[in-house]
Image 1 (tube, rainbow, N blue to C red):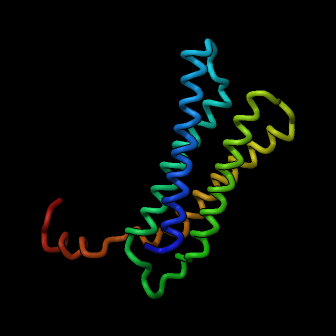
Image 2: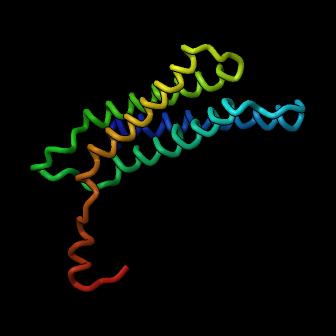
Length: 151
């Protein structure tokens, strides 16, 4: 398993732990604290789980399991997978921090931070799937399908 794959997967697990902790705080606040968590707090919890954990886990496993790039592949670039990693990690970390903080503070700069963080996340996902597009191809299954095998 390559370093970048391990980095994606371990970071995903870290975001899962953060997301679970945010979820515990939210349920505690709702059920025992007598008040609903703010929509910003709920957004932070959701993004920690769905983007930080699920999306980064998908990306790490895709890097690990998809067929190797063909020798003449000019689209796949492992450096872009690293750029995508940093965009996702920084974007998601800032998004979580900004969303939680937004529950108490409506400052314009904080709103801008949340929007910027969201754009970093979108950029990371876009860069990742752009560079991975050529690796989404049949390898052994094309031969089996040509022989009439059905799945």
